[in-house]
Length: 286
Image 1 (cartoon, one colour):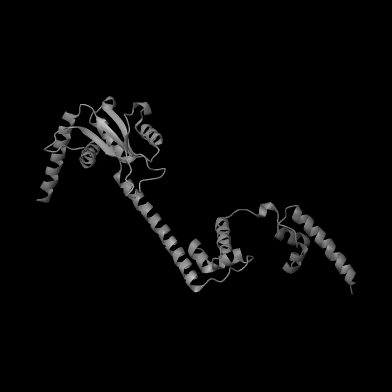
Image 2 (cartoon, rainbow, N blue to C red):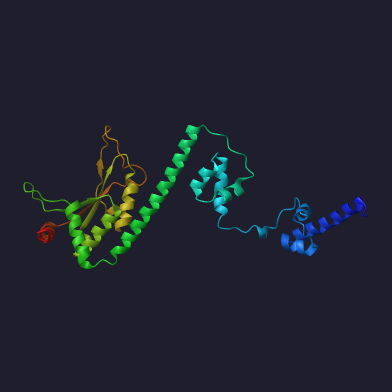
């Protein structure tokens, strides 16, 4: 019968070999085969306190989920709430956070509100994704725009957004005002299509007094491709203290005013083009 001290010496010698192999970068399987240790409990004791080599810590697709699950657990969320938030199984969540302390028990009402909020946030995320996909699919349906399609789109755009004559106030000016950069670019492409030279265009910014005027002018100048010095005097709109404005913040750049000089003849053409489009549309209704 082997002496207990001899067994201890054998274990320590085996542990030294196991640790050396681990530090050399071997996997648990390789160490087990090298030492001919078939007992996992014994292998665990031999490698106790010895961290695995770096190469075994390869990232995988669930690393981000695991870290997020641990963050949510530390915030006090339950397994069910983390599952709603991340969309992964509770068994995985349990494995990832089992070393963390249990969250404090919340009042049932508070817990219900938190769960409802998380469900709603998840629902909003789903809706946002559906909205993005719908818009992307719709944009792809447009395809390449022909000159005629751009021509008709530009006529309709001007008649919707541009200045129009009144029977009691004949001016026949081609004046366009808008705050949407996409609308402005489509309008400028239309003007180029119908032969309006850039030399006939003048620009100015119309903006609230509380905004960053110079920053807005630079933005519009970059968009239309002219020097900021080419802009006419800015039209400043005074703020009514009784009105709660929503067009504020860094994205607020006011409106760009685009005027075509000597535009009387062009205005008459636009009015005629629009009348022709209306006549064609009305014929389809009959």
